[in-house]
Length: 240
Image (cartoon, rainbow, N blue to C red):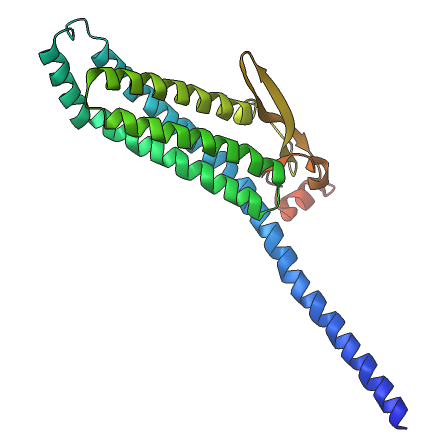
């Protein structure tokens, strides 16, 4: 009788452990899917924000370049005046804000892909973050320049780092805007390597549409095209 009770108790405890494990795993799975969905939805917004900041930087750099390259800036006095004006200019303040924002955006995108366990997406934005960090450093040297030669050197360095960032961003986002996926389909970044003359190759994306998440296993997922409400689908399919 005791043996029967012991066996029954053991089986009962085993069942409790199985159900407890399943209950613990279910929220984790739901959380993982929710994180992935949030990452996918925010990717397009990240692209738009980065593009907006790059447009602002281009506008600011046009002003700064025009000030540096003015023909009358040949005397020491005129150069000192331009240097002082640039240091107080709204263009340099805007440049600082945009550079900081690109650093934050690339870091957040990398973190989101790591959290959703999409390795290739994390690698892409880790690379973009490194370019943003280099650009941020050269932007600081540009702002802190105290002599004309230092200003010219910092301006060239920033332009070079900006170009590297733009090329990496284009490698990731190129072709995404033209993608038109059907209802319920996912946008998928398939890995692509872009060769550059005299430079290291860039990791990038070939954007395409997939019907299932598993079809994008080697790359990373973008947003999913919303499906129409079930009620609307049922009404459309009903015989008239």
